[in-house]
Length: 429
Image 1: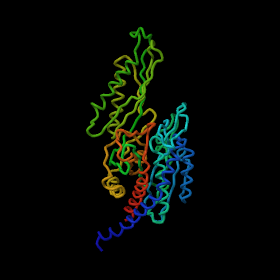
Image 2: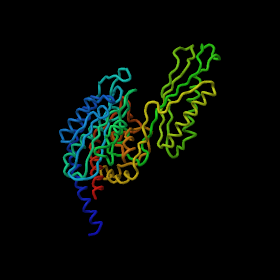
Image 3: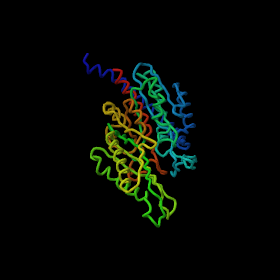
Image 4: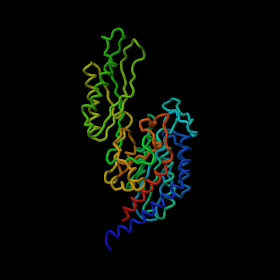
């Protein structure tokens, strides 16, 4: 028998499974939307996803999936062992909402009030994590119904605190990894998706290599000498020094980073110092963020920020203390190039070749990157913008008007299922 004939024969079961997935996912469309609306109406912030994780655990248990709870505070992991030997494929969804007061007119809008950093705030799924959970619950239902046909094991990872935690807490993907979520059984590959409110529904965006930026937050404390505001010559004014530092930091991206290869960002997002108009304060604190797409660029950003801040302060008679990272660090979300190339036909088969788009890197960050540091991973974007809408006018993520077209969820279910089945089929040849 010719090799081509053998390959044809072994590919038939995968095609048949993908067809079965499509039918099962279509049948779950309304249920997935119902799950999403429930999560949306009842958001919980990072490390507080108690109600959310209980609903997920109950659903997985009802499917006969082995369930582990309480991982990294509120994380849930489901383990589905297939009927045939094969690799371990992990699928991940994040669970936390954001401290944002919702403004959308949908009937299931969040009215939840909670506390964040000691302040009463609204809570909202303003980044689509409600969609991710609902989609992965649908995937679990489809794949568990095909258990006997699976060539391997599926790990469903429902992760808390992707958006970070309050100071002094631990959480998110980094903590999940530390607590062994990629072990017992050892994960071979991981897939994840992110809904996108500015990508048209029905489309998928992907990128090999660096697809989302690595991020470091930073603190710069400038110390000078206080004086009466009427006698500035008696001071070493940390406000003036901070202004010089902020302006000089903007030269890093324009003069030190080769932006024809990868973008980078240096942003000061908060500055505080002083409490009265006629008193020059003793110190000023600045908080900011650094974004980069390669380890080399990250190293360059950290070096130049530190150099500029400390030397500028010294030149003006002050001192500057720089902490990078200050409280958090996410690596680059790096899609394994070989895995991406291998699974691209699955994306194209599921969504249609014309609907699978190579996209530029983005300077937003994702802690999915912590999983990708340990095992090969593919993270892609799922369209959630209503057809025909202008991406420039669609409400962006992390805003009160964030909106998602739910008709795209079924494509998410089908894609994660097919990635799992096709990867397993490829490994079982």
